[in-house]
Length: 331
Image (cartoon, rainbow, N blue to C red; front, side, top):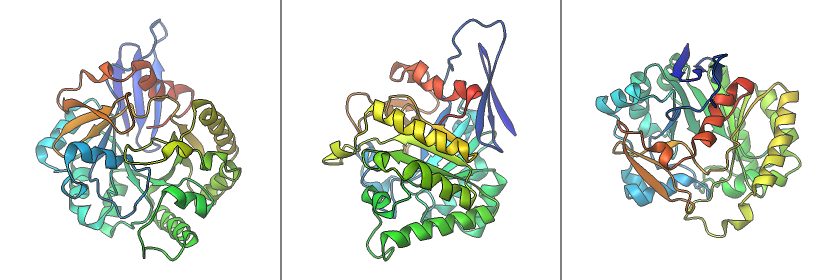
């Protein structure tokens, strides 16, 4: 299935089977091909997680929603109708950890209700979905995007911290993640890796070589890369901050390595921390403020999204999707 959205300059397309954007620009159009409305909706199914990653920006939403324990999304027929009727082409179901077992009824209900949308589910790679959920993910052609920041266990776990007792060592954590990816791929699901580049892993000389080789060995053919976003709760974040020049140099190395192995590398190139919507548990939409890390701007209800580009650069948002005709970009 290919989802299409008409723009004044042509058509923006998203292939659900490959999870790739493309753009068809009319020959006689002289204007810059900017999208008229935002493209991707991030749905926070929960703020709860079974891990304790220090750079998790979901923690920042607690300022607006209250405690993480009380901020699970209420999946209702009205909410699903609003999402289906919205102009978003792709829905990213995120968290927290959306694959937590007690969230399965809500996740399946959301998956069953979504129509004519590309679906991506973000996960930390520690939870194996049930048989029923696997079947639903496969039926909807959903892509599971697994967090994976480094081939080196000590660097991977420096920010991605697991709770006491979950694993016997950092090496064991990595082994379990790789085994889970094998199982998911064996079930016929589409799996991609997602890497957050920060001041530690971006200088790891093994990252652009060993990680894509391991991905290729497992059968993962898509790689999403973005820059570290400090949470307002993270103290001493300066050692992990990554300047735009260093970020772009690291991206260039990663893209070269991925291309050699035939891995589609989706890189978030814009300088804004977050130029996509966040959906809170009560149906309110937020986007990232440019004033300080962790601060959000409320855009109102999902039914009213016209004011989005008052807070986010239209060109920076558009470049991720419209330029897909010349190569893949991040969602």
